[in-house]
Amino acid sequence: VPLLQAAGKKNSFNLLGLTEAELQEQFVRGDGPGGQATNKTNNCVVLKHIPSGIVVKCHQTRSVEKNRKIAREILQEKVDLFYKGEDSDVFKEKKASEKKKQEKKRRAKENLERKKHFKEMQQLDKK
Image 1: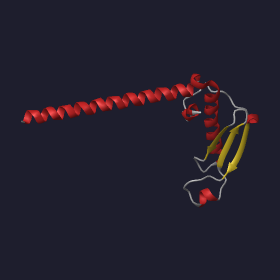
Image 2: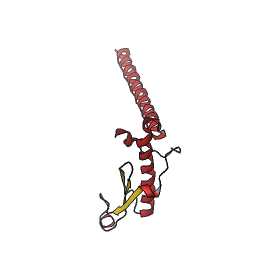
Image 3: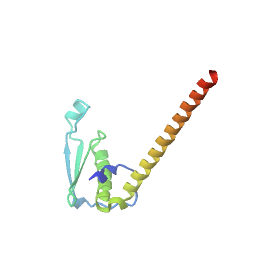
């Protein structure tokens, strides 16, 4: 299940295909901020992949068509992760971005330590 949280990357091209026969689609009212625009329109898309049981809820825009498209993209990535696991391109991209983020954090920490050491040396020189 934690693998499915890696979905949301847009650069994957080698994903498993979905057929419309495998999908169950519903339009419901979205939640969150938006007032009347949210409370009176059914523009939130709930998409279910029947063979795997994966459900995606998309309410990113006011447009039903855009939400349908976005929901299908996210569902395709999640289904790919579900079936391929760690061999999925989406998973590999997520791991690479996490590694890059950790490296950036490490460099920032080293830089901070250098600055701290430099300030200490300046304080000693003044005395």
